Length: 154
Image (tube, rainbow, N blue to C red; front, top):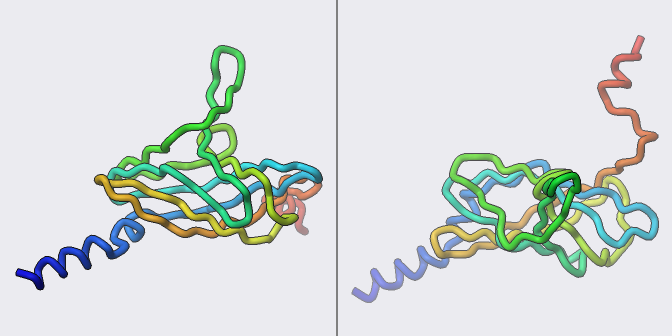
């Protein structure tokens, strides 16, 4: 009897959920000089119904979950408490929609830097931390897209 209780406790403590959520294409926008807030983007795919309920990063003072929506003629951004991750569907956090807002950068960031993220996922009444790494990407217009540079190759 006691052995089965220990086995159940060990199974409950193991990070089962983290393996069920896949993080891909994680990146954050390179901050402009003096910019204190940047957007964070990533694709999440969960093997079962779950929710992203929190995000954090040691590189930032605060991280919030946000969404952008049209309200009449105005694009509005607001904080949300959770982002649903339906089973088997990829949820894309990207510019102009659901995304992370990262506040109070603790160090200067430039394109190519790696930023750790800690995502809190809730599923079936349990919460699990999922670690990810986001790459800082430049959004400067001076960088031509790869397709453009290939189109002019001789």
